Amino acid sequence: MWRLKISKGTSPQRMNVGANNSFAPVVSRLGHRLAFVNAKFDVNIWRIDLKGTSQKPNLPFQFIASTELDAIPAYSPDGRKIAFVSQRSGASEIWVCDSDGTKATQLTSFNGFGAVYSPSWSPDGQNIAFTGVQKGVKDDIYAINANGGTPRRLTDNTAEDKWPYWSHDGKWIYFTSTRSGREEIWKMPSVGGEALQITRNSGDEPKESPDGKFLYYMKGWPAAVSVWRAAVDGSQEKKVLDSVHNEGQWAVGEDGIYFFRIPDKLGFSDLCFYEFATGQFRKIVTVQREVQNHVAVSPNGRTLLYPQSDESGSVLMLVENFR
Picture (tube, rainbow, N blue to C red):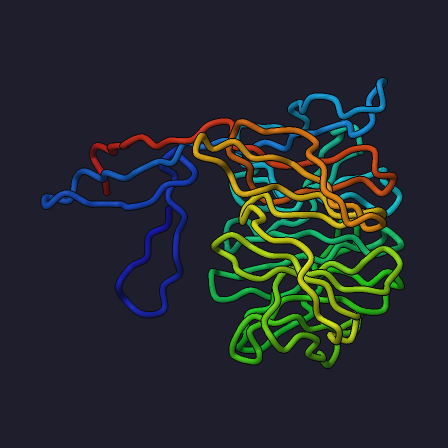
């Protein structure tokens, strides 16, 4: 929670009220009490070993966890590192850990003056592209060295640019943009430069196939989404999947697409696999908790990560002697 003086030329000041995820502030008429809502939710990243000792998937288990949100995981190309979004420092930042979930290190430091999400590794594992929202203005694409440093802003225009994804050769970054008046897939040189529009009939969250021949993307968010495939130039568009969970969503692997189905009446979601070679579907496991953004599969296809809501609710807070 932040406060701002009405006079011109002042800057917002962060309030130390001892609570993150606070909203809906109300000050009493006499001005000495502050009431607000504090959201109590905990999203953690869970892991499934897709090929257990019996060559069948093992049961999911909590993998990357803290008392704050941990979500949107992404494996490095060699599978040795995982980038993810966490609020454990008090604000949304990009973190990196080893593939076993240990040695978590904060990579970005926006320090509450915005939000970051959607990390994506370069093919050589040296850089991570992500979406940054500076001071709540709009979404832009940034890149940062995987070992840390100062983020480089790659887009800067009046449109929203988000959800970056590197091409397999590292020359391009695909992303979602509203430059044409609605969300479409664009691409730009990975070092920055003029962007080219790819899709013409809407598209969101691009993912290139491992062989670089196809571009996968989704349509329909925030309702149930469908997954589409096109050539990397946007031609030969074709629907691949329907009725995909709008939060758990999907990930492209070497042999197919992992995705969550729409939850049933009990809120249970089936994690499924669509195989490219056969066009067949199979269920991997049913998750009985609320799934969050996003699915990630390891490069060797042996492990899968997904965020899950382990706690959800809110409490009413009161600050006495408010000044």
